[in-house]
Image 1 (cartoon, helix red, strand yellow):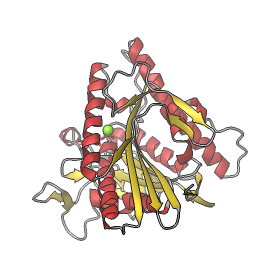
Image 2: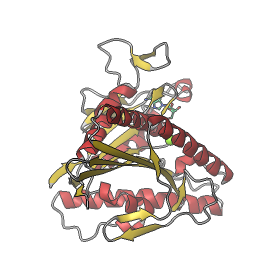
Image 3: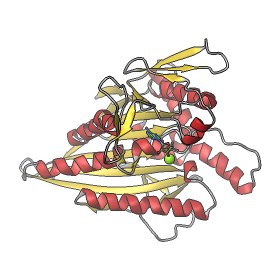
Image 4: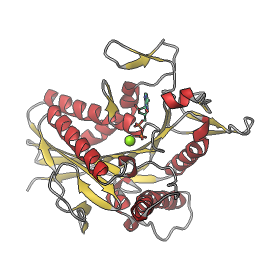
Length: 365
Ligand code: ADP
Ligand code: MG
């Protein structure tokens, strides 16, 4: 098996209206396709440069076309559109899937940094997930007919260490449980996995899931920025003439906001929520740190996958059988300096992880 490092990309968004109104300054610059530089607003001489696989400048240099899609103003603009991001990251996921590798895409960053925009998108500016699904079915339709294809779709949310099936309308008191199978590893017991035959079906499911997610968080008087959303696509190719199947699991994860939870004014619920949401995210950081240490030759006795729901589900993606990509979403604004720096440091640690992705094949009985 080959050793793959995690592909890490950074993306900086435009100023929000609020940031513009308050006269925010941009503390981020990108001088090449791989470098991100952050400047300390209190000490402008103090700059730190990070090198990742990709650095996406989506801060300026763009305009709206007639369909409302953001495109570059001119050929010299370094602006990265949704299509550019999909072209690099989404295509990689699709290539892996066709070859029978598992693939995982994680979006990390503080609330409002652009995680959902990159993953799901907004209006005409479709994100990576819809583009991946659309192209998957397009490619299936163009293939020859001596193969069969099976695509299933599931969508869940982890909130307070509880799992909610976003494709199910029934009440789920206490949430679904993670179980462990000797061969399958960790899985969510009772999670709906819907067979899909075309992109329109997936689009509907995503809409439905997003609606349930929003309603649920409104009912609990919470914000969906505190929950993790995991979309899983199982892609199976059956080669009828060769008695062979190839199987790929694609995990697309929109993580909860990475900002430190403020403790002021917390009631019981909020407190529990704050610490629990942090449990999955904090533990993801612990797992990443442990894996990064192990990859750099330090002696690591234990990787704490079992300590949170998210890390159980992401175990194959983290140091296991998956090609994994992390997109670190950042704000350009000076007021977000501390959070942005911490996001870049997190991404730097993730860069050190080594995975062992193998093609999942089996012969038919
Ligand atoms: P998050 O999911 O990290 O909380 P969002 O994706 O919801 O953040 O982004 C916050 C706001 O910024 C949204 O209004 C979104 O449309 C906008 N935004 C984020 N990234 C971009 C981008 N690359 N181009 C244009 N608008 C963006
Ligand atoms: Mg979001």
